[in-house]
Every structure is written in C-alpha cells, then in structure tokens.
Length: 328
Image 1 (tube, rainbow, N blue to C red):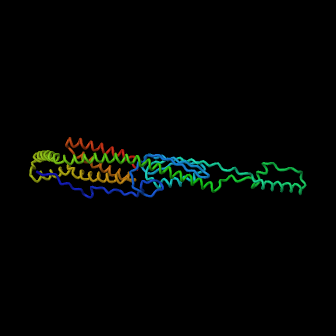
Image 2: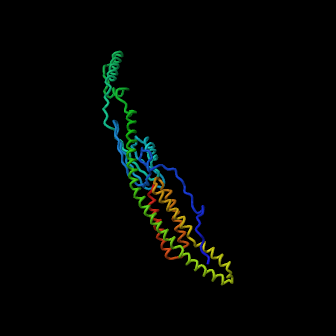
Image 3: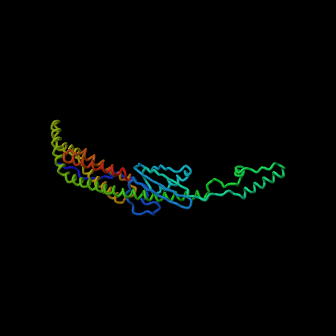
C-alpha cells in the first residue's frame, strides 16, 4: 500500500516578509527604549505656559492604514501647523490623528502714548501757524494720534511670536507623550489577546498533526477503492497505473506542508508580538498567510472531524484579523 508523501517545506512555499523601516514606539522626546506593541487608538493632552503665552494641545487617534493628521489651530497661528505635524511624524507610524491647538496671550502691559512725540508735533504745529500768520487752532487728539510715532505699532513683537511657538511645541510634546502612553496601554492588552489567540491556534495545529496518520489511512483506503474501480471500468488495473494515480491523488490531499508552514507562521507571530514596535502591517501579513494555510487545509480535508477543527481555526484567525485592525 502506498503512503502519502513526507512533509516538505520548500522555499517557494514560504513568502518573504516585507521589511519596514520603523521607529520605536517610544515617548516623544525620549531616546529609543524597549519597544511595545501599540494600539492606534489613544488620547493625549498637553499644556505649556511662559511669560507671553499659554498653549494647550489635544490629540486623538483612531485606526488608519497609514498616518493621517488633521490639525486645527488659531487662524493667526497657522504657520505652526507644519511644525506640529512634523513632531507627530517623528513618533507615530500609523493612525488617523486629529489635534486641537489653543493659544492665549498672557496679559501684557498696556503701551502708553508717546507724549514726547505728540508734544513735538504740537510745538511744530503752533510754530507753523505763527510763521504763516494763521488763525490759532490746535489739532484734535485724533489728528495727533494719526501722526507717525504717536502710538505704538499694533504688530506683534518677534519675542511674543517666538514665545507662542515655544509654548505650542512644548504643549505638543506633552500631549504626544500622553497619547503614546495611552496607545501603549491599550497595545499591551492587544498583545495579550494576540498571544492567547496564537496559543489557541497552535494547540489546534498540534491536534491536526496528531489526526493526520488516521485521516491519511482513511483517505488512502478510499482513494485506493475509487482508483481501483475506475481502472477496472476501463480495463487498466495494472499495479503501475494504480500506483501512479494514488500518488497524484495523495499529493493533492496531503496537508503536512500546510501544517509545517502554519507552525512557522505562528512562531513568527508570537516572536514579533513579544518584540513589539510598529509592526501592524507585518502581523497582518503573517495572519493572512495563516488564513491561507488553514483554508488550504480545509479544502484538502475530507474528514468530518478535521473539517470541524479547521472551521474553528478559521474563526481564531478571523479574531486575529480583528485585533490587528487596531495595531500600529
């Protein structure tokens, strides 16, 4: 009696993982540290105050295929938008981030009118009246204020503009730090759930592996009977014909390669989840590979018990996909 082929894992059977350039999921302004798995959902708020300005920044992030930012700033501070966005991109890898920036100028001393300049204008006015022998009539206050130098410029001083920018960026750093912490805390829960699902699927793979000899024997018997009947019907019952047909059908029904590849994918998944970092896309790729192997196993299986186990495995893989939808 011919048996099924021995397990072979070819280089073509294992897809090469795409490598991503990634930054550690670390707090803003801090050097790289041990990476954690991060969620894309989080919230952070920061405040900063100095002599001239008080700034507050709120950041919210949800799922996103890439990194998308949408910031709202006061209309007179729009020049800071690119700086705030650049700060976010230094730390975040994925997610849809919305931000609200508020700025309030601190109370400043009220600038006084330059009376010395105004007296000079008035003195020159009166002298001109006398020299020109005009009727004496002093200018009104509004006329004096309209003269150059009588009142201070309404343009913002460079020092104030610089202080506002400093406050906004400091508040952004604080908000970003809180946002990352929030994403990491949820990421820890996601990592635990992923490890649970990986373990569950690994247990099922072992069960399938143990079932293979029995399933193989039953399939082999059925195949032998079918091929024998088919060859008898056309008067071609030579042993060589029977052997050839059995080999072809056995190879089509063998799931040993799928088991081996699935085991490799699960080990990689577990290692990457443990290592952490912004690896959501890599995890999605590996889970998709797991789905492919499980689906192939189901398509090849004709045993009811094995088919039921494969259905349960598909449900676990689907749960993995749902969890990874929120991983950075």
